[in-house]
Image 1: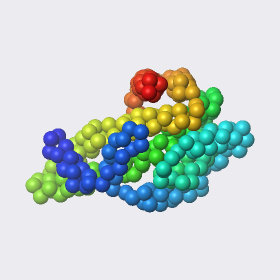
Image 2 (image 1 turned 90 degrees about the vertical axis):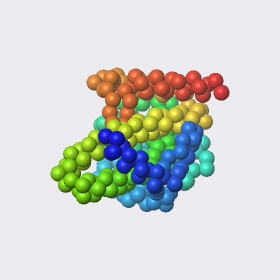
Image 3 (image 1 turned 180 degrees about the vertical axis):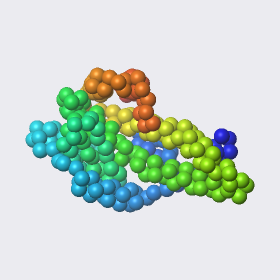
Image 4 (image 1 turned 90 degrees about the horizontal axis):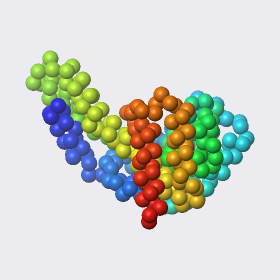
Length: 252
């Protein structure tokens, strides 16, 4: 375990000279991709998603997305993203995602829990925050380092004892999942919540409605209320963190 962790840390030190500071939280994160690279990746994925999704034709929902989206965009300053776009997809699952180029895909199922503009702003601001913080680029950068360190370690093991390669691969994957992937994914989700709350505040939305949004999510997905995933904390922990950030913001 220690040797595997050493490979990971060494790889990060070797390639970690390029950094990007996230807005609001001011956290330094390793960045091996340029903004142009991220835009290119976003453009390709945007075309792919458009080719395999059905757009929602619900006029009222589309108006709500555009209305809230424009209001949030108006408070984004000094961003590398210049052309935001909100795409409403005909899909029942409650989900949304923002590509590195500012294209936000929102499933129509989101309206099952977003009961008003303030609650809708919660999820839109959250997804926009992932792009503003360049979380996509940071995740790709981490994967490059983890994969590179894994290959390097595998080659070393192959020289020492080829019979240990399979055990090494299993241990390395489990270790990176525990020490790198899961902690960073959850940190980015928490960070996007905090940045999103700041966008909501600047746009004049009720921050307390973000709590209501996640309470709605908890009610709809009762079976997920107490569980953790590789990317998210439980709804209860998420709501608790949001309340702390809101209290902090209101005291400033």
